[in-house]
Length: 65
Image (tube, rainbow, N blue to C red; front, side, top):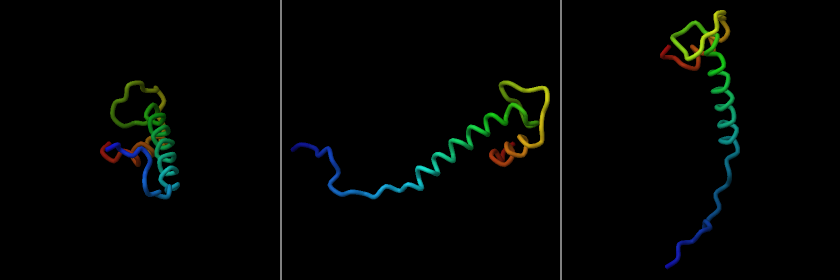
């Protein structure tokens, strides 16, 4: 018996899930860029000048720091 390749019922697409994924990726982008300028922990590359704004963003998005 062959396996059907198309779904028999159609499930409506939930577009808000796509937008949540987009917002999560933007958040990850800003988080990793803020790690260069924060005062917490150790990161692969560190700028000599640190700032309060990126430190707040990093502490908000990574509570274990």
